[in-house]
Image 1 (cartoon, one colour):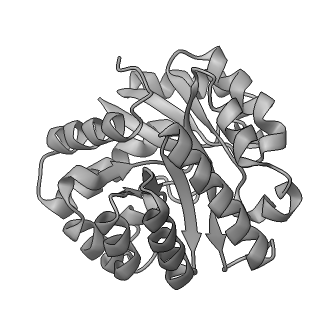
Image 2: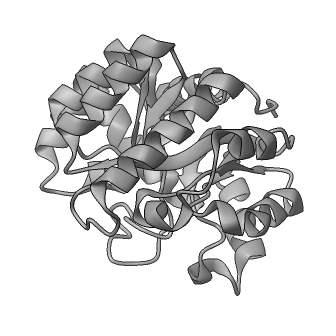
Image 3: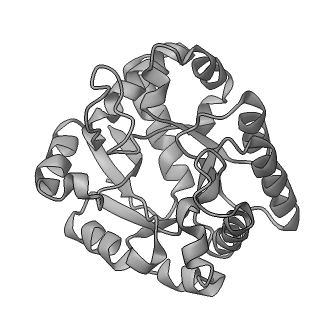
Length: 259
């Protein structure tokens, strides 16, 4: 059994065949999928998808690309929306200095709002971090000092230092199809040193399809390809990595009912 801890089933790429995509994932042994919110103002669309499939759950939050558009989203609003039984996480929120589609101050403000919601609800914060390692580490350390909160560094592609800070603060590290790319030796070296009880896998579908599907539209069924490479990287069997990452998932996403 595997879990796709991060996908975007609401994206237009899936609109015409969402039923088939979910069915392929289930047939491939993916028992749970978390479809991730990128705009609170479109949360109703995410929730409708989660409610349509027993195996699909969702988060509520604002992606850093959209942070400036949703600075009016409050911690209280996130906490209230997160009461729905299908909502198992907060986010994704974070810092993206690669695209810089929102002012960095707005991204940081939004991140701290989401951290507060994760702290109150106990739901894991799904963190997006790209080219912002130092600032992300500083915010995580500062906010943890105010009170611990569960979190996951999703689609990890940052440096070793951020992974180490995240783990030291109690966080989890999730790897996507990037781990399978030929030139990702440095990332595999980082994954090898993450404690086994902090590892997760994801697709970030429709993006970042793993080998051998690279260049094509990604989908939750392909999470098994990333799991295979992660198993080889850390020196365990495919069955063991499935057990490890699934156990870690249900420990972190504690609101999620087990199959």
